[in-house]
Image (cartoon, rainbow, N blue to C red; front, side, top):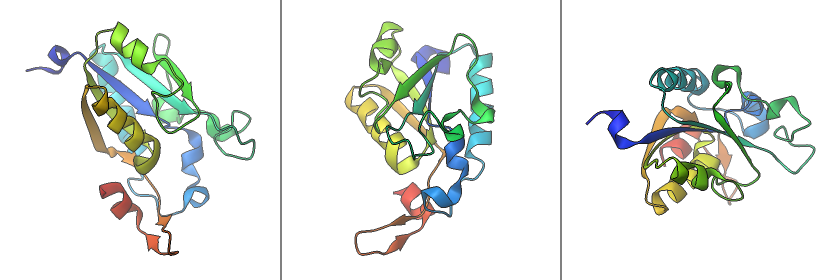
Length: 166
């Protein structure tokens, strides 16, 4: 079966300039080429003329790098949307909550979602799980996603690669 037969869409989640500031998010980012790989996937998707949804996070906190007043809110240069591609702005982890994403997907009779983006354990994970709950055939491309080190509840540091894999 070829990809077109699956009625797929590509969803790029939060591939924004803010995530280039590794220290701000916890340091030790894995998959440092995730944006480059995402750009290659996006280029191929465009060549196939398949639906594309660019999701961006808009923080309500003016001090956040993801606030609309900050440069970090902008899309990473490797995945800039072009005319005709949907851009959806969200303010929570899931790309489905408080947005028109599900309605747009359903309107186009899309049933397969290929998801890439940042960060693996926040907005990407939440959106992937909700996509599955909605019944979409859902694929996550692991080398086109990335995350950072995290500190656990007992102040233990967890490596970004462990966080990514789990």
